[in-house]
Length: 376
Ligand code: SF4
Image 1 (cartoon, protein in one colour):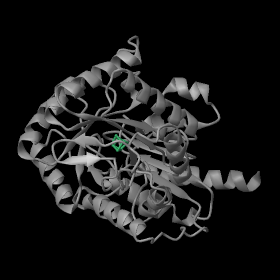
Image 2 (cartoon, helix red, strand yellow):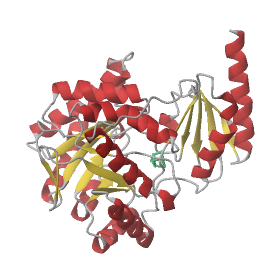
Image 3 (cartoon, protein in one colour):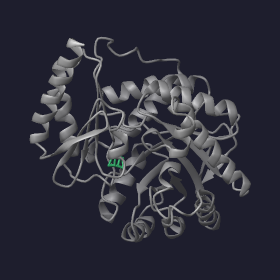
Image 4 (tube, helix red, strand yellow):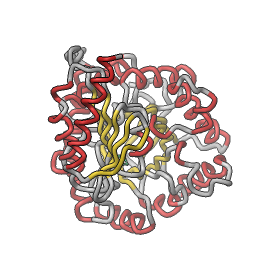
């Protein structure tokens, strides 16, 4: 796959792009500071066939834990940085790849130019032989690009990725890959095609963000990724599923199955067109605020079954880092806090409710939305 992309080395044994087999990735959802649990999950993912395992790191304490994790596993590690780009210097000695999100580079030191922050990350990566992923996400697109393309969120994502490729190119740093993730399969297909048309040399990491609970999350991921892989786009991928920690390897199993099916020309039939209600939910990671998150997502799915013929989107997110932004576009959004769940209606906060209480409020909101649509 990705025969025209340039190869990017990850650690000592893995290459992404340049015609190498598609590498399957996953991400630890254990608390990063729980070193034993994270090592165990990384090894389980590797045993299932993961070529790279990503771990979130948001603090100095987690950077320290990452060093300990590195000592106990040889699986190629990618670190997920969000708002604290400066952690790159602390984590680079312990990982093989650094993922940063261009849309989150504005939070820390807002007065410092983004180009300088990228240079900081690139310098840390270069010093320690790490690759970089420019990880653009629909829920946190560079605000400047959103202003430039107010009616085309896909183009805003593509332009953000292109701008960051340019920044790294100018620094003479070319060990990078790009991802353009969205929760809408059509946007994933469109974004990756547009990007590849402009930068066919850059390896692509494919994924549908917040795909949700299986089996729907697997089907939606396939709708996004199958056509791209069949077109020769994609050098590495992750299927992001909302599953409990002891089932995390399903992401890897489904990723491998997807690649093999496309290789053999087997494609997934479209989902039942009658089911129009879409529930997107994040796969959870170490940032998840409450262990009840996966259970909440499952309860939301069960409770909303009666509304499945309605064209409605519900987003369920696990934390405050990405939850507020990635629930904005949904008709109804929920994002988890430590003891309560924040409920939104088309981006507008409704309130914060207990984990059981929120289901009652959600049903009331859903009923009201259906009634409004019927009367309009
Ligand atoms: S929304 Fe939060 S908990 Fe869920 S995957 Fe994203 S960062 Fe992790």
